Image (cartoon, rainbow, N blue to C red; front, side, top):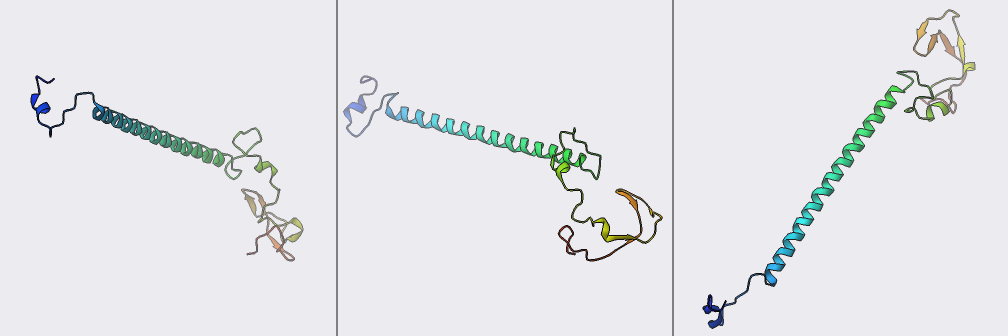
Length: 136
């Protein structure tokens, strides 16, 4: 090395570093750590995207399943896996349904057939504000 670069050993202001010195090792370590950090970032981003896509797909499937088991659209039986047990444990009368003693039929002849049964003309008697009806 002395014969090839004599000016580095004669001039005191010049600094000579051999290949493979500490500076080259530092550059390799920092560069490899940067590549590892970049790879981890890309991997975590891909995992997050796949997780959120899977969540969206499952929620979409659940919405479709609940739509098909809604009693308003189709008849739901307990063997249907998508129907929750809450449908079968719910009370018979919902918040809008009036108890039968509160309704007086004015005409015995039915008006027609509706989605929820036979439609009659009637009058509501007594106060209808109780714990199971809406205030308005």
